[in-house]
Length: 454
Ligand SMILES: Cc1ncc(COP(=O)(O)O)c(C=O)c1O
Image 1: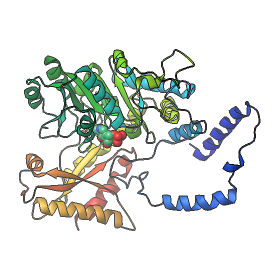
Image 2: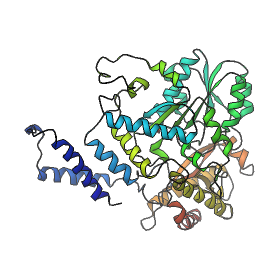
Image 3: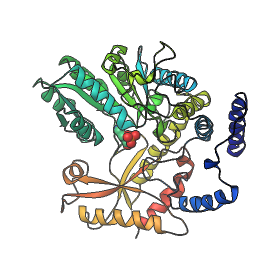
């Protein structure tokens, strides 16, 4: 895609639309000469160089990558209008695009009915789901796995709801037995299952959580902020295919969150929350004397906690879905490459004398550590930190990783032979969320073996 050319076409399209409204004088207070701009822009672009190369497969660190060029062109073109998707009065075109894109997300999860909208982030999307959980079961707590994203506990605090962590099993998944014991007390109203944990990419057994919860009259919310789009690989043939059971169960859960700004190729500012029962819209009821005046059609602000939201985010997602829809043959192919890279890399690490696999990857997140002598948590912690720093500092062949702090007890469950001489250790974590990771794997692995060699 010729991004530069299409950005120009985007500007042309908006200017053409604007020309239909007749000429007017722009206020001199806003006028800036090209010379003035050139100086500020030079400084600006120079400062932007102080970044990690998220676009490059040598960046195998955190959940970061640039959006697809189609999303960039969609976002910037719509941003020239700057619609606000709070209300149809703020941006009718992009509000309708949002409804269509959200319906595609609901279809991806197999939801027979839905009420949903985009949010600025996964955190706000989860906050909305927990808010509805509180309204439906006032006075009852919200349970989530000890491996769930930290914001669940924080948002329970914000909502004044008791948040209860449930132990995870030896693979970092919520333990349904421990959950059942907790739910038997009758104090929990909603349980959060995570489909793709932030640290390890573990998939909670949503189907088992659902069965346990339903037997106790408890609701289920699925935090699939990171992993949601992997539902496109459920039951797929080949090495990228995932066990269908947890993914198919999402259609029966009460709500689900997915972040298009993670695996949906979007720029930041694009999360989504979906409820299976459209009737929960009643918890959002409010009056807004300044908006909602042009039609009786549903305004997105009537079903969201946030007020202003970028219509450009919806535009970018809609345009991206026109080209790479959330189907196995569309976005599914993008995710499959990263998943295959994770599976292949896990095999290479398992056969390596210099690296050890922390646990087999369930998605595209690979966690591993240097094979140290002595085999102690202290040695692993120090060697991981050294590899992280040395990898970034190498001027010729830099490589960018991230670390994950593991508690000694969790480490011992997977690697009982490692001496627990401290409370825990940092290990290395690589999120292979760019499909280019697959073709770069040989280079990445050889770099890391060299780094691990000291
Ligand atoms: C599972 C999960 N939930 C929630 C979040 C929070 O999402 P956001 O960073 O979009 O607020 C993340 C972020 O990594 C996540 O991985």
